Length: 167
Image (cartoon, rainbow, N blue to C red; front, top):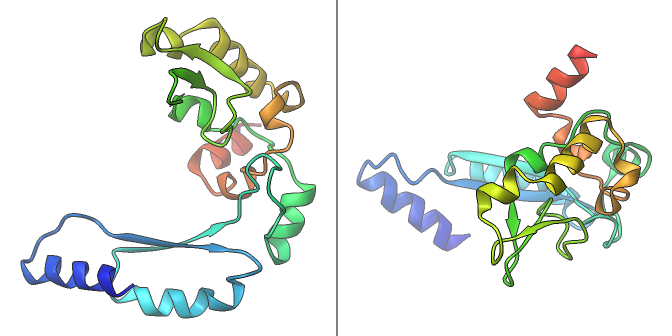
């Protein structure tokens, strides 16, 4: 914290606009009592203060969300298409392309950059089929999506709000 404050102070001393500094805390059982203090502390320094919900990494980690978010995480589901397959292409160290950053085991492989270009993967049959299933809200047919709780924070996105208004 001391180093981040020092960095921001030096940036401000030279009247620089960049880099933009954002600080984030994950709201969960271990940090829920610290959230308000965190916001108060960083409000005067950082350009943006974010409070994120706890992600269970496709059900591989215990759900540490609290309050209403815990209930939503355990009982809710995606009611709109997840934005990940349109916003990112994950490439592993061995060149495999994955559908989502949360799928760290790449159970939904979409290509291989040692055999295809990124453009070929991005426009390829595998990712297109996954996107179709997601547009149809058939998450139960995609292994990594079955236990995903990313909807707890994607619900606030423009994409989710737009989709809900259209339907």
